[in-house]
Amino acid sequence: MVDQQDGPGSRSLRIGVAGPVGTGKSSTIALLCRHLGEEFNLGVITNDIYTDEDARFLRSTGVLPAERIRAVETGACPHTAIRDDITMNLIAVEDLERDFAPLDITLVESGGDNLTATFSPALVDAQLFVLDVAGGGDVARKGGPGIARADLLVINKIDLAEYVDVDVEQMVADAAAARHGAPVLALSKKHPETIDQLCDWVRQLHAAHLQGTHIPTDPGPMAPHSHAGQDGPHGHSHEHPHR
Image (cartoon, rainbow, N blue to C red; front, top):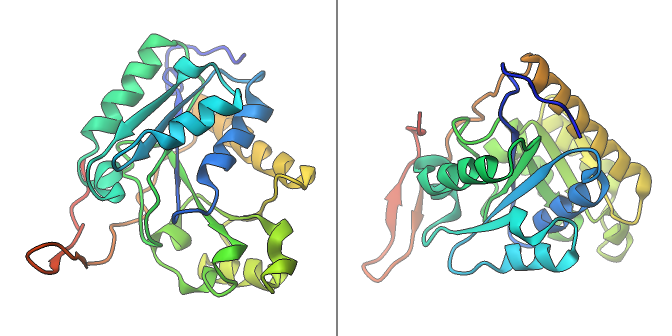
């Protein structure tokens, strides 16, 4: 495991994992835990609105001791708990870091949300955004804060592309254009070389965190939007992130 000293990397590196429902956020976290679990001390916080299903899935895989995987039930829109009021998640992360000190990396999984969901930099140090080919080859070029400004964009389940008529190379090219050259990773749990690339990204990020050279950046708030309820649509914006 990595030795931590007092200083910039004295607490765990916190990585947020966001993306729409069903793109493979939990399975991406499982991959990281399976392949990096002997190299780093890891912990996971999952978010669901009403259940702890993602945490139960991860525990069932056996990739980490069950007690290192904890669930937050947000009771509201997933983006609210990762950006607007991060209190529940921040307490969960800090408790996990205290109970299993020293943790090297804490992975925080957002509940499934839309293309604009982003984490507050007060909660995580870096964030990756997960899309998948089954969502359509045109999704990557639609942009939005999550796609355009996450530290890493993952295009997941590329082994399924032939079954859903998606050109992976074109989807990656569209994503790179939407991100103005920021990193894009095509990923499949069936393609070991892509898993290695993801793990290498995490290793490099962790090294920068320990050295104090990684500076968390704010990908920006969600666009104004509305939620339908009993009293009709309720519009609001997320222009003032938690600080």
